[in-house]
Length: 246
Length: 111
Image (cartoon, rainbow over all chains, first blue to last red; front, side):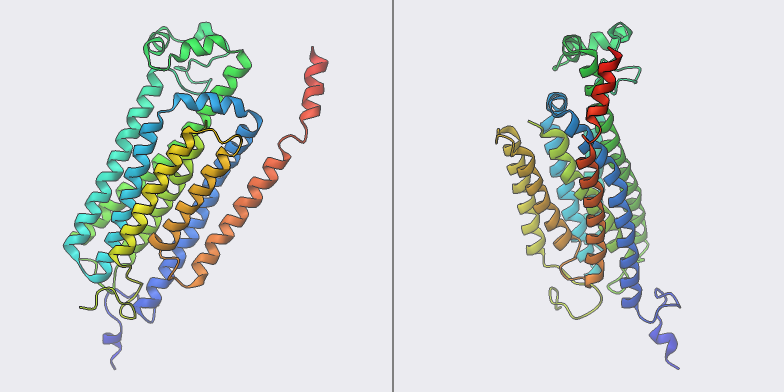
């Protein structure tokens, strides 16, 4: 029988063909992406509710975000999506070296994204641009509880959040704090996805170096790219919703 | 080597030109949304930003994520997710102010 021939090593025994295996894997990946979209949608609903109730708070608080850094991160993530799409193409055509290069560029872009994110987060931490309950926040109901070091940093920061906070009513401060709560939840959850993506890409680079992939066996690359594109897609919405509130 | 044609192997090989075109379109749209974000369109700002984001997301889905060439089943799954997100969002947002008068009355009575 030619069954051994019809069943190459990379095709699991419960699949008839490599194509069937690939399509099944892809379908499974899309089900996972569906759960990812619904997962994030919970936070988007919280965002919409908060913004609907306090549009002026959002317009005000978004001024404390760095639009330029947000835009740079958008570009970095779009480029990484492009290089991963190129990688999928390389994998399909059996171009192993080019695949390694494209995966490496994608990995570096993801690292750059997280580096910029780290800059933004540390900046906000030092200047107290956090949710009201955070120890380092300047948006506390009782401003006498704002830490002296945070007060100091904030007064010398480029947005001088402490002066703003002092001019607000306690209710407004609490709501500005809510903006930062949803900002950190959304970007934080997204950032975790980027970090997981980096682990995934690292694993793919290692497997490619080992020679695991070929024109008939590149499912992991394709499904990894799908995950990465969803991460990019969520950021496409996060950027205008958080950074571009006029 | 018949590089860009399909019909051999598994999956659809997207030409480099197409991928590059999508990247350039995405970058231009990012520039556009950055620019419109700094302007004042009198209440239309959010709608304009969301339209641009949706166009960008469609490009990513159709080309980068291969939905254009995939079996329709994957696209159907994706739209099911979007429909439920839409229901989730629409019902919550329309309900947001539903009990506002009760809250106002409560606050009033506490004064």
